[in-house]
Length: 146
Ligand code: GDP
Ligand code: MG
Image (cartoon, rainbow, N blue to C red; front, side, top):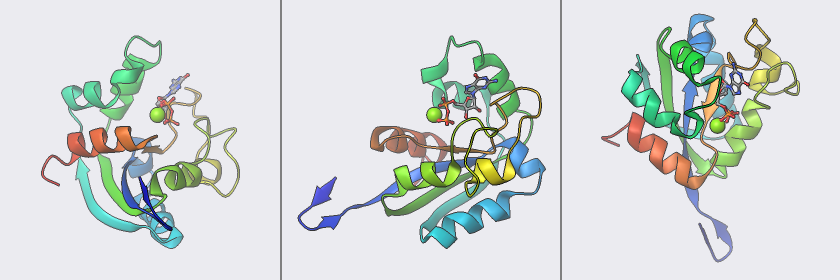
């Protein structure tokens, strides 16, 4: 959404996935979000339920990686984050890098900190909303009181 001469502030949902939390990278990932100039609006360490993950990953239901993905996302706590700023939705995707951490460019979260641990692209440290619609939907799921 834009108004004349300005870019509207938007919000995105970021998840530090269980691999990122386990490896102690939550602080580094939050640091990169803040260093880029985005504002942290909400941060919560939580264990995702099957129900929440089914809603969050509804677009992937039926794909071969869906069940292992949900299992992985339930393997430990997740850090749920709402970040805010102009352009934050594509901006965080750009900070995160390509889905496959082996292919993700150096300088990105996945490129600098991620690798293939045997399940190819599954353990890639972070999730970031991919559109205004996804962001609104996902923030509503993870932070119903926001
Ligand atoms: P993202 O938007 O970059 O996170 O990627 P997608 O929305 O396409 O996929 C959601 C998540 O599912 C990814 O971040 C990975 O954790 C996982 N994933 C995607 N593709 C594959 C795959 O081919 N195999 C496995 N094991 N996991 C996948
Ligand atoms: Mg996605």
